[in-house]
Amino acid sequence: MIGTLINCAAIVAGSLLGMLFRKGMNKRISDTVMQGVGLCVMLIGLKGALETKNTLLMILSIVIGGVAGSLIDIDEKMNRLGAFAQRKLSREGEDNTFAQGFVTASLVYCVGAMAVVGALDSGIRGDHSTLIAKAALDGITAIVFASSLGIGVMLSAVPVLIYQGAIALLGTAIAPLLSDIVVLEMSAVGGLLIVGIGVNMLLNEKIKVANLLPAILIPFIYYPLYNLIMG
Image (cartoon, rainbow, N blue to C red):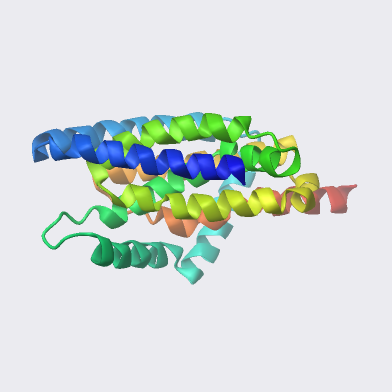
């Protein structure tokens, strides 16, 4: 858990620093920064999504994951959590980007390959180097996110702690199922979801990316079943 705790601390520190920059920005600058961040998020997502070796699996993952996520309505639950935290932690009259910052940052920090591989290395081998590198990247990203989306970005440290912590603690049990191709395809699906986040930020659309989160698990289920049936 040491690597995960360092990662969470970096997100909190980056968010606090980003809030200092935010205080000096007027709305015109903030909107421009938001659009720039949206472009960068889309680039990050595209780089991950284009790594896929199985486009059909990605399509199936999005469809099946979207159905499952919509039935659970993950997006609504995450937004409710963000709105609840906003009511408790924000002063009256502050902008309403708290929930958006929480949801956006949570998704970006949790769906990448480094979160999975780093947590496994941390839990199984006690090697925290990948998560420490991720912490540096997430801390910088948190500065940018918080400067445009506000303090809600800091709350994303909680799902990061739960997600990466669970992978680290369950590492020995799930490692045999996470072959290189499984991690690659999970990351590619996650990259496509990050593109959706970028579209939301850039065009002010409302793609319910959180409802697509179960799609990341489909390669994890697909390849062991495929090997069992075909092997």
